[in-house]
Image (tube, rainbow, N blue to C red; front, top):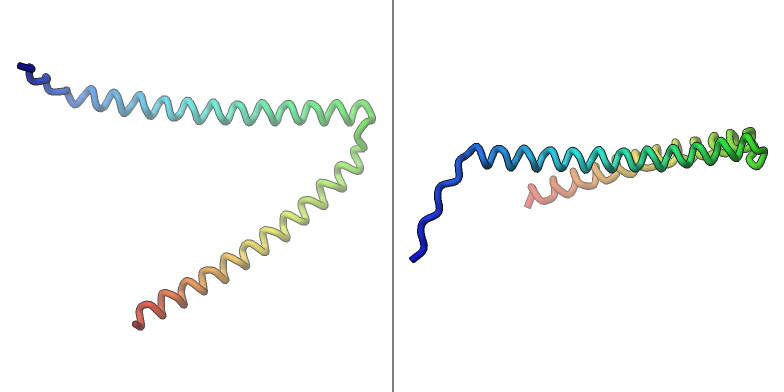
Length: 99
């Protein structure tokens, strides 16, 4: 015959939830640290390339400006596409409501 299990105190559930949240936060901070470390390595490599003369800082600045313009244009297109999608969803909802 098996004995009934003792009831788990609610504090234990609270403790378990707190530990899970801490582990999630720890993992999030670890990921952020890894991204930051990778970015630091990229910047150090770029700085070494510029200081050694292997990379032209003027060309890098021009490329960055070109990419920023392209990014702005892509964001505008995404905003326009989002607006079109919202209008289509509103029309579809209206059509469904009219049925």
